[in-house]
Length: 321
Image (cartoon, rainbow, N blue to C red; front, side):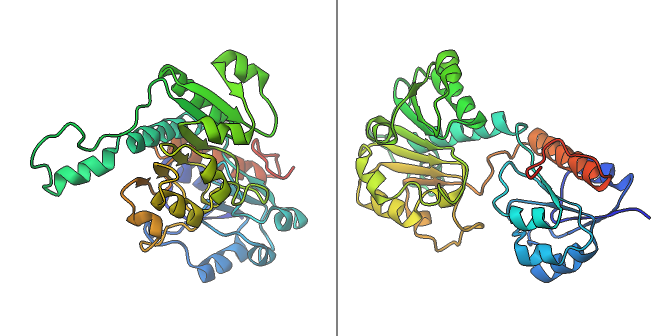
Protein backbone atom coordinates (compact mmCIF):
# COMPACT_ATOMS: atom_id res chain seq x y z
CA UNK A 1 0.00 0.00 0.00
CA UNK A 2 1.40 3.39 -1.03
CA UNK A 3 2.11 6.00 1.66
CA UNK A 4 -0.27 8.96 1.59
CA UNK A 5 0.97 12.51 1.05
CA UNK A 6 -1.05 15.71 1.43
CA UNK A 7 0.12 18.93 -0.24
CA UNK A 8 -1.37 22.16 1.10
CA UNK A 9 -0.94 24.28 -2.08
CA UNK A 10 -0.54 23.92 -5.81
CA UNK A 11 3.15 23.27 -6.49
CA UNK A 12 5.15 22.71 -9.72
CA UNK A 13 3.90 19.67 -11.58
CA UNK A 14 7.31 17.99 -11.72
CA UNK A 15 7.42 17.72 -7.92
CA UNK A 16 3.91 16.27 -7.80
CA UNK A 17 4.82 13.66 -10.43
CA UNK A 18 7.92 12.75 -8.45
CA UNK A 19 5.79 12.05 -5.38
CA UNK A 20 3.12 10.19 -7.36
CA UNK A 21 5.66 7.61 -8.53
CA UNK A 22 5.61 5.95 -5.11
CA UNK A 23 2.92 7.75 -3.08
CA UNK A 24 -0.80 8.39 -3.08
CA UNK A 25 -0.93 12.17 -3.41
CA UNK A 26 -3.72 14.62 -2.59
CA UNK A 27 -3.32 18.32 -3.36
CA UNK A 28 -5.43 21.21 -2.08
CA UNK A 29 -6.72 22.51 -5.41
CA UNK A 30 -7.75 26.08 -4.65
CA UNK A 31 -4.84 28.37 -5.49
CA UNK A 32 -6.26 31.50 -3.85
CA UNK A 33 -7.78 29.93 -0.72
CA UNK A 34 -5.63 28.55 2.14
CA UNK A 35 -6.49 25.00 3.13
CA UNK A 36 -9.17 25.22 5.88
CA UNK A 37 -8.28 23.95 9.33
CA UNK A 38 -10.92 21.21 9.29
CA UNK A 39 -9.60 19.87 5.98
CA UNK A 40 -6.03 19.93 7.26
CA UNK A 41 -7.09 18.11 10.45
CA UNK A 42 -8.82 15.43 8.38
CA UNK A 43 -5.93 14.95 5.96
CA UNK A 44 -3.21 14.86 8.60
CA UNK A 45 -4.83 11.93 10.44
CA UNK A 46 -4.24 9.68 7.41
CA UNK A 47 -1.12 11.21 5.85
CA UNK A 48 2.35 9.72 6.08
CA UNK A 49 3.86 12.87 4.61
CA UNK A 50 2.74 16.52 4.81
CA UNK A 51 4.05 18.96 2.22
CA UNK A 52 3.29 22.44 3.57
CA UNK A 53 4.11 26.13 3.26
CA UNK A 54 5.32 28.83 5.63
CA UNK A 55 1.78 30.23 5.80
CA UNK A 56 0.36 26.94 7.13
CA UNK A 57 0.17 26.77 10.92
CA UNK A 58 1.25 23.26 11.91
CA UNK A 59 0.79 23.61 15.65
CA UNK A 60 0.92 21.10 18.51
CA UNK A 61 -2.86 20.45 18.48
CA UNK A 62 -2.72 19.58 14.79
CA UNK A 63 0.36 17.40 15.19
CA UNK A 64 -1.34 15.42 17.95
CA UNK A 65 -3.87 14.22 15.37
CA UNK A 66 -1.10 12.91 13.10
CA UNK A 67 -0.89 9.26 14.09
CA UNK A 68 0.69 8.05 10.84
CA UNK A 69 2.76 11.09 9.93
CA UNK A 70 6.48 10.55 9.38
CA UNK A 71 7.53 13.88 7.92
CA UNK A 72 6.53 17.53 7.56
CA UNK A 73 8.28 19.01 4.53
CA UNK A 74 8.18 22.80 4.56
CA UNK A 75 8.59 24.70 1.29
CA UNK A 76 10.69 27.45 2.88
CA UNK A 77 13.94 28.13 4.67
CA UNK A 78 12.13 29.18 7.83
CA UNK A 79 9.98 26.81 9.85
CA UNK A 80 8.50 28.95 12.62
CA UNK A 81 5.06 27.89 11.36
CA UNK A 82 5.73 24.38 12.71
CA UNK A 83 5.84 23.32 16.36
CA UNK A 84 9.19 21.57 16.14
CA UNK A 85 9.08 20.32 19.73
CA UNK A 86 5.67 18.71 19.25
CA UNK A 87 6.80 17.08 16.00
CA UNK A 88 9.99 15.77 17.61
CA UNK A 89 8.08 14.30 20.54
CA UNK A 90 6.01 12.26 18.08
CA UNK A 91 9.07 11.21 16.09
CA UNK A 92 8.03 13.26 13.06
CA UNK A 93 10.86 14.58 10.90
CA UNK A 94 10.73 18.21 9.80
CA UNK A 95 12.56 19.43 6.69
CA UNK A 96 13.09 22.76 4.96
CA UNK A 97 14.64 24.08 1.75
CA UNK A 98 17.75 26.12 2.59
CA UNK A 99 20.41 27.26 0.15
CA UNK A 100 18.44 27.04 -3.09
CA UNK A 101 16.75 30.42 -2.71
CA UNK A 102 19.73 32.49 -1.59
CA UNK A 103 20.51 34.35 -4.81
CA UNK A 104 16.89 34.82 -5.83
CA UNK A 105 15.95 36.34 -2.48
CA UNK A 106 19.01 38.57 -2.59
CA UNK A 107 17.92 39.77 -6.04
CA UNK A 108 14.47 40.65 -4.75
CA UNK A 109 15.85 42.35 -1.65
CA UNK A 110 18.13 44.61 -3.66
CA UNK A 111 15.34 45.31 -6.14
CA UNK A 112 13.09 46.34 -3.25
CA UNK A 113 15.85 48.56 -1.86
CA UNK A 114 16.22 50.28 -5.22
CA UNK A 115 12.47 50.62 -5.78
CA UNK A 116 12.02 52.19 -2.36
CA UNK A 117 14.97 54.53 -2.67
CA UNK A 118 13.97 55.81 -6.12
CA UNK A 119 10.20 55.78 -5.45
CA UNK A 120 9.57 53.46 -8.42
CA UNK A 121 6.07 52.25 -7.54
CA UNK A 122 5.01 55.71 -6.41
CA UNK A 123 6.21 57.15 -9.73
CA UNK A 124 4.43 54.45 -11.73
CA UNK A 125 1.17 55.10 -9.86
CA UNK A 126 1.65 58.85 -10.39
CA UNK A 127 1.94 58.37 -14.15
CA UNK A 128 -0.96 55.90 -14.44
CA UNK A 129 -3.22 58.18 -12.42
CA UNK A 130 -2.72 60.93 -15.00
CA UNK A 131 -0.91 63.22 -12.58
CA UNK A 132 2.11 63.75 -14.85
CA UNK A 133 1.14 67.17 -16.20
CA UNK A 134 4.57 68.73 -16.42
CA UNK A 135 8.22 68.19 -15.42
CA UNK A 136 10.01 69.90 -12.54
CA UNK A 137 13.51 69.37 -11.12
CA UNK A 138 12.33 67.96 -7.77
CA UNK A 139 9.48 65.80 -9.09
CA UNK A 140 9.53 62.41 -7.29
CA UNK A 141 13.14 62.76 -6.23
CA UNK A 142 14.50 59.87 -4.19
CA UNK A 143 17.66 58.75 -2.43
CA UNK A 144 20.96 57.76 -4.02
CA UNK A 145 22.20 54.19 -3.66
CA UNK A 146 25.69 54.38 -5.14
CA UNK A 147 28.40 55.10 -2.57
CA UNK A 148 26.00 55.01 0.38
CA UNK A 149 26.16 52.83 3.53
CA UNK A 150 24.18 49.60 3.79
CA UNK A 151 23.74 47.98 7.20
CA UNK A 152 22.76 44.30 7.25
CA UNK A 153 21.31 42.84 10.44
CA UNK A 154 21.81 39.07 10.25
CA UNK A 155 24.59 37.90 7.97
CA UNK A 156 23.50 34.47 6.79
CA UNK A 157 23.75 33.19 3.22
CA UNK A 158 21.23 35.71 1.91
CA UNK A 159 22.81 38.57 3.84
CA UNK A 160 26.19 37.80 2.27
CA UNK A 161 24.61 37.63 -1.20
CA UNK A 162 23.01 41.05 -0.67
CA UNK A 163 26.38 42.41 0.47
CA UNK A 164 28.03 41.20 -2.75
CA UNK A 165 25.43 43.07 -4.79
CA UNK A 166 25.92 46.21 -2.71
CA UNK A 167 29.68 46.16 -3.26
CA UNK A 168 28.93 46.39 -6.99
CA UNK A 169 27.22 49.71 -6.23
CA UNK A 170 30.31 50.87 -4.36
CA UNK A 171 28.35 50.81 -1.11
CA UNK A 172 30.04 50.75 2.26
CA UNK A 173 28.62 47.59 3.83
CA UNK A 174 28.49 47.13 7.59
CA UNK A 175 26.83 44.27 9.41
CA UNK A 176 25.74 43.05 12.82
CA UNK A 177 25.41 39.37 13.61
CA UNK A 178 25.40 37.12 16.67
CA UNK A 179 28.96 36.22 15.78
CA UNK A 180 31.55 37.85 13.54
CA UNK A 181 32.33 36.37 10.13
CA UNK A 182 35.99 37.17 9.39
CA UNK A 183 35.98 35.21 6.12
CA UNK A 184 33.07 37.26 4.77
CA UNK A 185 34.70 40.45 6.01
CA UNK A 186 37.84 39.64 4.05
CA UNK A 187 36.34 38.11 0.91
CA UNK A 188 33.48 40.59 0.41
CA UNK A 189 34.83 43.65 2.19
CA UNK A 190 32.45 44.01 5.13
CA UNK A 191 32.84 45.75 8.48
CA UNK A 192 31.43 44.35 11.71
CA UNK A 193 29.79 46.97 13.97
CA UNK A 194 27.49 47.05 16.99
CA UNK A 195 23.74 47.24 16.42
CA UNK A 196 23.66 50.86 17.63
CA UNK A 197 26.46 51.93 15.30
CA UNK A 198 24.82 50.20 12.37
CA UNK A 199 21.52 51.98 12.97
CA UNK A 200 23.17 55.36 13.50
CA UNK A 201 25.41 55.28 10.42
CA UNK A 202 23.50 53.34 7.76
CA UNK A 203 21.56 54.93 4.92
CA UNK A 204 19.85 51.58 4.36
CA UNK A 205 19.08 49.05 7.09
CA UNK A 206 18.35 45.59 5.77
CA UNK A 207 16.77 43.00 8.09
CA UNK A 208 17.97 39.47 7.31
CA UNK A 209 17.91 37.73 10.70
CA UNK A 210 15.81 34.57 11.29
CA UNK A 211 12.53 34.92 13.18
CA UNK A 212 12.87 33.47 16.69
CA UNK A 213 11.64 34.29 20.19
CA UNK A 214 14.76 36.40 20.59
CA UNK A 215 14.28 38.39 17.38
CA UNK A 216 10.54 39.07 17.73
CA UNK A 217 10.12 42.87 17.75
CA UNK A 218 13.89 43.16 17.48
CA UNK A 219 13.54 46.52 15.72
CA UNK A 220 11.30 48.94 17.61
CA UNK A 221 10.74 52.61 18.49
CA UNK A 222 14.05 53.08 20.26
CA UNK A 223 15.94 51.89 17.18
CA UNK A 224 14.06 54.11 14.73
CA UNK A 225 15.03 57.12 16.85
CA UNK A 226 18.69 56.18 16.34
CA UNK A 227 18.43 56.06 12.55
CA UNK A 228 19.09 58.86 10.10
CA UNK A 229 16.09 60.90 8.97
CA UNK A 230 16.84 59.90 5.37
CA UNK A 231 17.34 56.21 6.24
CA UNK A 232 15.39 53.43 4.56
CA UNK A 233 14.39 50.17 6.25
CA UNK A 234 14.20 47.02 4.11
CA UNK A 235 12.68 43.80 5.47
CA UNK A 236 12.55 40.59 3.44
CA UNK A 237 13.13 38.29 6.41
CA UNK A 238 10.03 37.95 8.64
CA UNK A 239 7.37 40.48 9.55
CA UNK A 240 7.43 39.96 13.30
CA UNK A 241 11.06 41.05 13.56
CA UNK A 242 10.01 44.68 13.11
CA UNK A 243 7.40 46.26 15.38
CA UNK A 244 4.97 47.46 12.73
CA UNK A 245 3.22 50.06 14.89
CA UNK A 246 6.55 51.60 15.81
CA UNK A 247 7.60 51.56 12.15
CA UNK A 248 4.40 53.36 11.16
CA UNK A 249 4.94 55.98 13.85
CA UNK A 250 8.57 56.47 12.77
CA UNK A 251 7.52 57.00 9.17
CA UNK A 252 4.73 59.51 9.83
CA UNK A 253 6.90 61.37 12.36
CA UNK A 254 9.77 61.67 9.88
CA UNK A 255 12.21 59.66 11.99
CA UNK A 256 13.10 57.62 8.91
CA UNK A 257 12.48 58.33 5.22
CA UNK A 258 10.89 55.16 3.84
CA UNK A 259 10.49 51.39 4.13
CA UNK A 260 10.38 48.45 1.73
CA UNK A 261 8.53 45.42 3.06
CA UNK A 262 8.12 41.95 1.56
CA UNK A 263 6.88 40.48 4.84
CA UNK A 264 4.34 41.30 7.53
CA UNK A 265 3.48 39.99 10.98
CA UNK A 266 0.08 38.85 9.70
CA UNK A 267 0.02 37.34 6.22
CA UNK A 268 -1.83 37.93 3.98
CA UNK A 269 -1.66 41.46 5.34
CA UNK A 270 -5.09 43.08 6.05
CA UNK A 271 -5.94 45.77 3.50
CA UNK A 272 -6.69 48.22 6.31
CA UNK A 273 -3.16 47.88 7.74
CA UNK A 274 -1.84 51.41 8.47
CA UNK A 275 1.46 50.80 6.64
CA UNK A 276 -0.45 50.27 3.39
CA UNK A 277 -1.72 53.85 3.55
CA UNK A 278 1.73 55.44 3.33
CA UNK A 279 3.17 56.46 -0.05
CA UNK A 280 6.74 56.03 1.24
CA UNK A 281 6.24 52.31 1.98
CA UNK A 282 6.79 49.85 -0.88
CA UNK A 283 4.93 46.62 -0.15
CA UNK A 284 5.18 43.16 -1.68
CA UNK A 285 3.25 39.92 -0.97
CA UNK A 286 6.16 37.80 0.39
CA UNK A 287 7.73 37.03 -2.99
CA UNK A 288 11.39 36.90 -1.94
CA UNK A 289 12.11 33.56 -3.61
CA UNK A 290 9.39 33.80 -6.26
CA UNK A 291 11.21 33.05 -9.47
CA UNK A 292 10.00 30.16 -11.62
CA UNK A 293 13.35 28.40 -11.44
CA UNK A 294 13.86 28.77 -7.70
CA UNK A 295 10.34 27.75 -6.69
CA UNK A 296 10.61 24.69 -8.94
CA UNK A 297 13.92 23.69 -7.34
CA UNK A 298 12.50 24.28 -3.85
CA UNK A 299 9.57 21.99 -4.62
CA UNK A 300 11.91 19.29 -5.93
CA UNK A 301 14.09 19.52 -2.80
CA UNK A 302 11.07 19.37 -0.49
CA UNK A 303 9.63 16.41 -2.40
CA UNK A 304 12.93 14.50 -2.32
CA UNK A 305 13.32 14.94 1.42
CA UNK A 306 9.70 13.94 2.01
CA UNK A 307 10.24 10.73 0.04
CA UNK A 308 13.38 9.90 1.98
CA UNK A 309 11.54 10.30 5.27
CA UNK A 310 8.49 8.20 4.35
CA UNK A 311 10.88 5.47 3.20
CA UNK A 312 12.72 5.49 6.52
CA UNK A 313 15.79 7.33 5.28
CA UNK A 314 17.35 10.50 6.68
CA UNK A 315 16.38 13.63 4.72
CA UNK A 316 19.15 15.89 3.52
CA UNK A 317 17.68 19.04 5.09
CA UNK A 318 16.50 17.73 8.44
CA UNK A 319 15.57 20.43 10.95
CA UNK A 320 15.16 18.16 13.99
CA UNK A 321 17.76 15.38 13.74
